[in-house]
Image 1: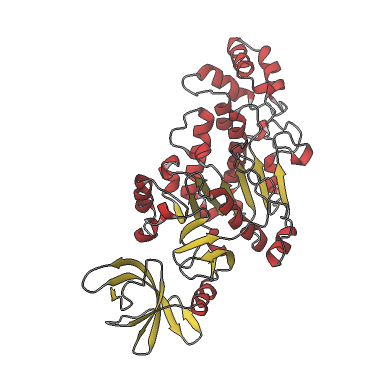
Image 2: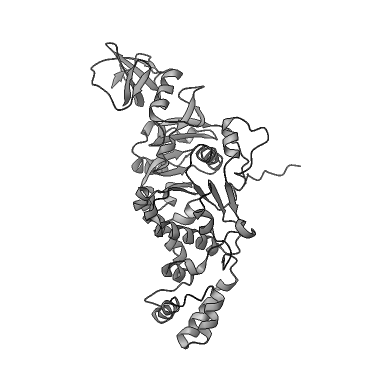
Length: 440
């Protein structure tokens, strides 16, 4: 706790230089108190020695002179931590850049903000930086076609970031795309439990049909559902029942099936810099779940290969909500819970974006070590965020209701210290934009 000699200038989020007897340390203000003698408290960031900052060193002291760190000192913090992905302006260091650590996207990230906060636009800013300046493949589950133009540059976009992004291999897969641009899943390659989820088969409740289906999986010559139905029609009563189930559910007409065409697993396995999975456009919502499940199953099955990938799930409640109850939705969510709990060491890293923390299963939310928070006016949501993300100072979380569009709090391992940010302009067009009010 340090007396605030400035009379209240040290707001939460301010970076201070503490000088005590000629020895200097960098500190972050996390809380500001009032009273006869105003005070602030926070955390020590590192020890300053000449023109360098050692973030692994600190030392005790009983009193210090506190001054606000200048741009050059904060730049020492960026250099010491390896923060080099520039995402906007640091609001507590006006005019100074805000940067993220590319190496710390090897942790799960939760991105949150209410509708209208600029959440999707801001996420695009960060993804541009990750794609342009790292070799980490990114897969974006995009339900609203917001990122389908990630491979295009805005008119006038220039500079090293734009030049780097222009060189990246960014592929967009769509439900009605042709050839390698089609968004497809290969039924025969899915695990039997996932196939059963698509068929709404329960191994106990539907044990006779399920057993017929299990036996059928041994015939590797059956490449698609049409061949399976034909085979079942020549079987017994259980076979007929299973064939009727397939036809009644309309699975044979789903446009998601790759058959012998290129599937999403083939595209991601080729390791492009970014793959945008445009989930909008399927005739049924279940097909979005099939695509997600087929890829997640494949990545999990091959996890021992330890091939890093960042899985970005926009509108994450569509795949992670605790209220989802269909067999396919439960299978997707449970796979994501598994990846959240165990996938980090295998290089399977999640970035989940949604409007409220309650929309994401707690088994996933609790595993996130990075937080990006935009405008959030719900007191209960802010309390929940404070519970799960204790590394985010409460005083900074409390400022969220007054954020303007495009402003955010970044906290956790992927930022040198908790930082308030005004996001920079995107280099690429946003695929989906708000519909305006018609005027006379």
